[in-house]
Amino acid sequence: MYRHFYTSRLLFATMCFISSCLSLNAQGGQPDSQQPLSEATDSNFSSTPQESSATRDSNIPAYRYYMVKITDVRDPYAEIFPTIQFAEFDLLDGNLHELEDLNVYKGTTVENYNPWGDQNIDENWPKAFDNNLATKYCNIEFNGLVYFMMDAKREIEIRGYRIYTADDTQKYPNRNPKSWKVYGSNDYTQNPDDAIWEIIDERRNDYTIGATNFTPYDFIIKQGVGVEHIEQDENTSNSPIYDLSGRRVFGMNRKGIYIVNGKKVLK
Ligand SMILES: [Ca+2]
Ligand SMILES: [Ca+2]
Figure 1: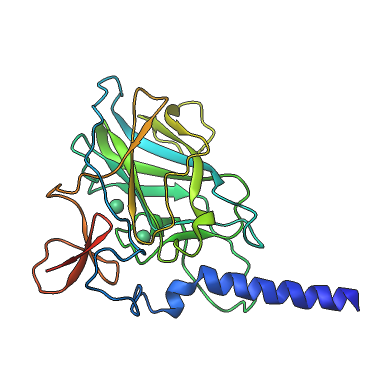
Figure 2 (figure 1 turned 180 degrees about the vertical axis):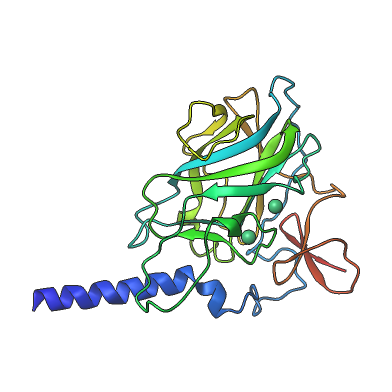
């Protein structure tokens, strides 16, 4: 009797959990369609990115390969299964522009339990690097370490990196990364524990990433350790622009609503 109850309860909880993790699919990729769209102050989105006051540290070496290891999320105990998610990860050049040709070549694979068995939900690591805010990395078996390896195609000094929140981060801020390390290397490897990785940035118990959907958060690297967060320059002309389905567009050519620096903009 007890066992039956427990099994049912676990299955129910699992289904609730997974449906929440996959809420994007249920909503057809349309964020917040019931929300008033003309209000830039919509609480779903970040309010006011501020100008950067950080200065570049010229001591950061140029690397071709980069890796981020995420070791903790905001609250791993908030749901039945510890979950990590975010929509995009980007490296930033000296002008805080995203590296356009960044290629992710390895990551921690999502092997989420699927009670239906026949669904093929793709929220794996390439989805955090596809320039699409409507897709995300979502792993409901977060065990204290996920990693992602990137190829910048050339040796380049990065000034920082950018993490975009997902489609339902407002509802599940517990899934936000909280502790991580960023590494660089000029030798190719697929081994996350390889000694050739040099640490260039570390965060511990960082609650910068907020409970907002589709929102970019920038982190500036300072001399490899002891880093500071800056919010984005609102007036950066090269800020990435997304349409309401979360796809990146290059210019606001049509009338409509766009997402720029995490804010809705009416064109
Ligand atoms: Ca990108
Ligand atoms: Ca994505």
